[in-house]
Every structure is written in C-alpha cells, then in structure tokens.
Length: 179
Image 1 (cartoon, rainbow, N blue to C red):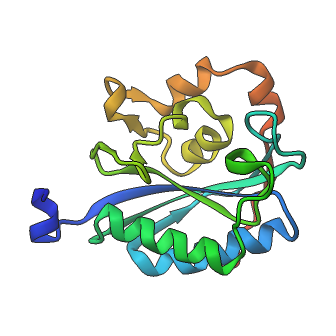
Image 2 (cartoon, rainbow, N blue to C red):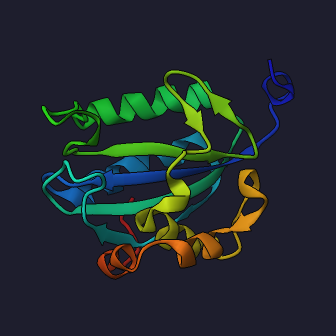
C-alpha cells in the first residue's frame, strides 16, 4: 500500500476525454460534469478535433484534457471512470480497443506515480506522442513536465510529434464547456 493510500494525500490527476460518435460535445461535457465530483481545483481545456488514432476508427474525435486534485487512489478513479463510460454506452464496438466510442476517458497522469496493472497503466504510455493530448494539456498547463521522461516538458514533446498530427489536431471550440 502506498503512503498516500494510508494518509489520503491529495494528488493531481490528468485525464484525457474523447468522443467520436453521436453528439460528441454532449458526451464530453457529461463526462466532465461527472468527473468534477471526484476532486477540486478543476481545470478543463477547450475542445480539440483530431483524426482517429491507430487507423481503426472512421470518424473524427473531439478531445479535451482535464486536471484536478483528488484524495482518491488510482483504483477508485479507474472504477469511477468505468462507471461513467458505462453510463454513456462506451462498449467497444466490433473494431475493439481502437474503435469508435461515445465517450472514452483515459488516466494520463496521477501525481508522479507509476502504475502498471492489467487494467491501468499510469502514466499513459502514448500521452507524449499524441497532439490531441498535448495541445489541450498545454492550454491548461503550459509548463507541465513529464516527470517519468526526465522532466521533459509537454511543449518539448509537442515539438517532436509529426507535422501531420499538429496540422490535423485543431481547436474545435474555445467556448467554456457547459458542465
């Protein structure tokens, strides 16, 4: 059991949200609404639109990143995410893990913790490679550092990703999300 499990020390959680089916904005707003109940000091990015990852999905995604402080341990956060995804019918379609989704929520970071279980890997192994994670992350935390990657900044990783990703991950809406 980790030190923070016993004493309830607050940790900063960074989550990525995505949707590429139905009313994408609605699904993300609802996800944020439910996730806000898990912590305090909540920060939410604008919506960003991007092509699907890994070439399996067929529709453009809307994406957002949110950060908050929480006393919940990672397993509790994962359980809540699973519950929220189920409310909106996440259910993986016939395309499997990389398929189309109403709402997909990933834990990108949990403080400076490293967790590797069959159901949860933190930090998220692809966070540094995805413009649809880095663009909204830089919007709400421009000086964010990837502690597990020698304190490399999100901005440095953004500069290393492909031009295709940068050009095809675009600001969809800078309006405040209704949550």
